[in-house]
Image 1 (cartoon, one colour):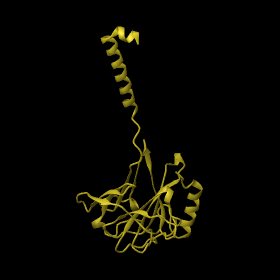
Image 2 (cartoon, one colour; image 1 turned 90 degrees about the vertical axis):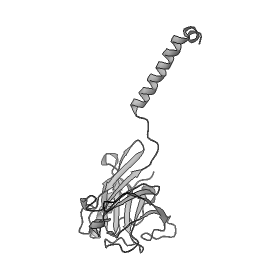
Image 3 (tube, helix red, strand yellow; image 1 turned 30 degrees about the vertical axis):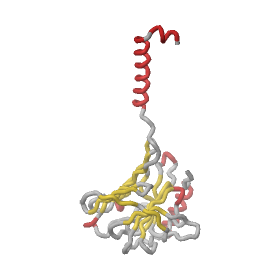
Image 4 (cartoon, one colour; image 1 turned 60 degrees about the vertical axis):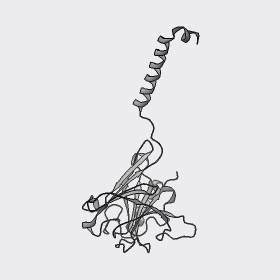
Length: 219
């Protein structure tokens, strides 16, 4: 899939600094930060709209993402985006998700925290706070606008991807925490499974040869 190359990372950093934010720990509060720490939540989600949320130490409950118009990046040709409704107001803004530096360090996704009016300036979201998840093929044109920072690195194994975004470095339950588990493709079988299949096939051959030695030779 197309990815944002490392050259754009430099441009994004410059734009972020010019806007008064930092790619790491700027003066604005981190996007997604809890406004009401006593009601912090843990959100686990994927790119297909399947999620669970745990609020204030309670039990996890299902949270389904829906496709909505992106009020934070309005354009005639823009597609609908995947959004999860949040149970409380949060700091607005955008967090870039990158691949490991060894793989190129490109931006491969983003989280955006906004409200019913599309605010991404770093002010608290009012009613209707949502988290938008962008994949690399659908990053918004105004990715670095407003309260922008570079967030966690996504790690992958056998077609599955994951990352944890912890605003301000304070994990749940003292603050909100966002855990992504990409469903990806079916994982490749580990080597021990392949070895086991090979040994089983060999054992079956030896068994058949002992049971029907002449038949095996004739074959």
